[in-house]
Length: 441
Image (cartoon, rainbow, N blue to C red; front, side, top):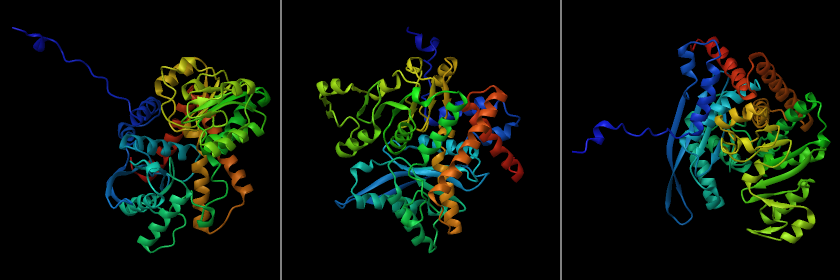
């Protein structure tokens, strides 16, 4: 008789990594080094609230589509929940939870009076008409209106959402609540309560940190080469800031691939063709067909997003997707500095490899905090009725973001941590102080 089933243990199935488990990996590493009790540690492991609803949207063809929607509120010890809303087919609960958790760390790191939250709708907005997109935006507010408000939870734009969508959301909120609420949502158009400087804030904050870091290292921008993965709003703005300050941008990419020139490329020219053709390689390629001869004359190569990460450069800026720097490619990365404009681009396994190799990583919770910082300025302006000048926004952004960088740098040196661990440590300690003051723990 076959007795193998009785004597052989079942195979061990590895638990799949998710954005939230990757967040928890870093969190557990850091809170083990902080003086806190078990109840306090447990408080950081899960969000305070997870709101889930299926929203019904009537399409232009008359059919109704049900879309999963989320609003995850992680921690509000330091102020109202704050975080973007993304429209994306893969915006599931695990992803939104991770982003909400990271936002809590982020707002605490730059010491602005917000907590952290995130929202999402599982939908491909590229398949929707403008009227359908507006219905999704308004349906989202209808679903979660009881959980948002300028003193409760203030949404903002994220992946595939923009100022127009934020305007529709604010309008819907005001219709339902019969209020005038310019501070309920940030990232709005200037004509509808937005702030100057919001469109470039993420890149601008990251650029301020990079400049400070390069100056402290006594390096010359004219001698530094930069590769940027992602040529959306943040990546495009960063390319312009770097190019105008003497850095050599050697590569940029979008979802269709990218271009590389060791002698440098002109972001203004790339943006022109990106807007004209829809691709950064549009000057040379139509789809997958490229004019190789012309590229050779201009000293340009067509590259994939994966190849961009491994190019010879001094500074690598992932500004697109999460989970792109992994244990499989970390050893091949040649950059000495990585500035994370994207959320979660580096896995914990890759972090460890890069740390051993002496690569300095400015983590997402610090590097891309310029966006939420200017969102805070917009929220403040909405509450006071004041309109800040572009100069004031830029000046205050630099002050706040560099104060955050210096706090993280001090923590990293004092506790012998990586910058990511130090950012988590600074953020958690600030949240913990607020929680203890409130008597929550």
